[in-house]
Image (cartoon, rainbow, N blue to C red; front, top):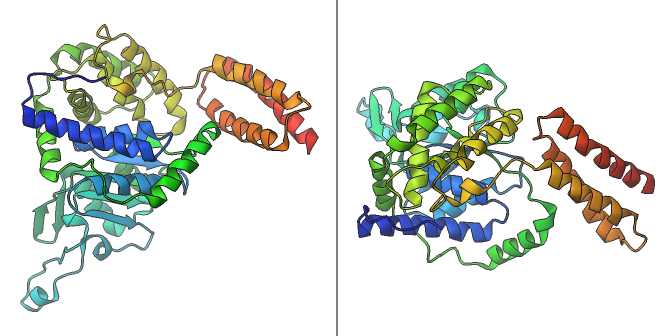
Length: 388
């Protein structure tokens, strides 16, 4: 559990407590999404952009809405299409000013005035809005003609059900420092998901957990005061190992990732970054095939941290699957399937669980380990097909 660091003032500690309370509150509603919610907190404190990858129905927009309800200020959400025009995001030109010869945008209720921005189906962005979005993501600045103004946005979240396929969209995708997949939860937790969803239906939108925009801005200003000196040699070594493994970590991204490590330390009320804060680098993949490689390299660095106290809760959570544990579970599932007393409902749950484990196996890069799991998995699939 994160503990107090006396180097922070009481006011600063209260702001940290409020953000941590918001994160905890959202976790009670969205079962199996702890990694995404923790990253939302990290990116909010670090003022960095977050990208969510996942099919419809996996609570991407719902989690952003929940965060928006806990933060003072407006949330702007828009579903991008190939035909989205700048006016739909930034607002139309002010007709009254236009008659006077001035090109001024009426931004009331639009993206330039929002504290939290959510761009759904981000990778549908067309060339007409691409440059404007890059400016927003890079510099938090709205520029249109001679009009330039800073944006009050605390965080920008983008979402899509696919990764960029066109070269022109790669630059847009690259502006999202952290990428995380939002998938359907483990079937084992389905009952909890249904219960939490039903509670949410009856729950008031008001919550005791909340944080003001100025308090978030004060935390973002604190990031630069967090000390990274002691962890820099280990961080440089980690970046080099990732590059040697074929993972593109540009100098710009390496610099910006320091903010997220500092954010991890800040939410634990520490004034110094420690090696375990490098857990955030698990989520810098460009494609799904890189996740296992990155996780294995980052986990090794995190586990080597000599300081075991006051680590961020996400530091000890390994996102990569354990082949041995999956093999044991598959063996038990085979035994359960073959029992005469196994009911039809139980067999349906076993099939759902097998589909989930099948997807988890895609994370495993080592071909020997993958084959180690494929044998019992194929055996169970064969039995399922024979029973139909």
